[in-house]
Length: 462
Image (cartoon, rainbow, N blue to C red):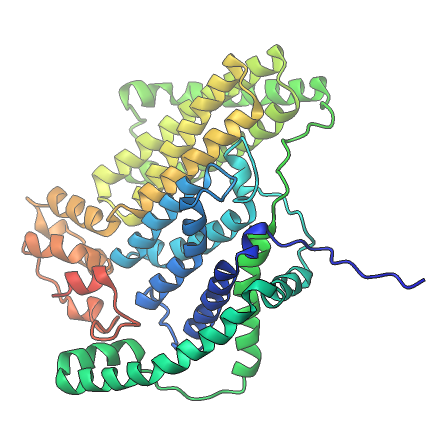
């Protein structure tokens, strides 16, 4: 008896609408062209922004049409749109290097979770998959679906005829407009001019990129299995946890007790160099806070008895004091040496960890569910990341240092100012600080070219 082979993948019902399926194909094709033939620069430019928006467009459309099941999708879409604007307006290293990576990761995770009915926000970033990842059967189902819709077969012929009838007119009018207006001609050339040299690598990269983009759309939107809640298999030994927490509490108490005079009075032994004291330790202390947060996540998931919660709360409270010690060191170093980009990021991360620890204490005292803490963590992390990305960090650092050493300009670190991105240039000009801007801010982008055009850079470089 001959068995019929059934596909292990079932595409989403939204692909039964042929217009949407063709739109997905066209979007994947355009993204492939942008990635392979337009040779985008390393720094974020206009074509990067077009790519981000094209990747998001199907999700935005489905969200507007209320076809996504995950009620948190729209909030993450809004966050991603802010991040996209940030990459097109700010020039600092964090926004230009790390934020684009975050945008791609968030978009992929949204596609994997948007068709899930979920109650907890953390499941948006920890999605379940309903299909095997390493299979192309879902793409086969998608292609078969497009070409087997009987009622739509006549549409293909009409589309082809429409395109053939349209192309000559588009070409004629484009030629006439470019001949009639030099500005329009220059505008088109900045968008599409490309020194195209065919490479045999395109034979492999084009189908690879096309399959990749199409997979993100089809696989993600077909991934409709509902996410399950976190399951706790068994509790861990309370005696072991108790010994661990008592030992850590005693160790932390010895450190905190030693720092109480510094916290209350700011007093230090006379033999200690203030600059060295302020410089040392705040990275290590933040690492302590991060490790304690991880310990809390592990223990709170498996054991939330009253005794364990008390010991956890005590450890968390002492860790917050350690965080305040770290902050005071950072403030002291700022006052002595001035601000830098890294020092500001360290300070903000310290605040972030303290907020997590405060909510962790509240969770132990109020008996919150583990999922509630994860929801808070994901929401706070997302909001914090978007907020930090939206801060003009280089201008902030420049202003802080200029004002700090206003009465003593010889101590102003001009070399550090010159190493900042062009985002700091308006502030530097405002306070009439003389720097050789051209060595640091020019020749990075070409504002006359669409592919390398960057809104923030081109506005500030005028």
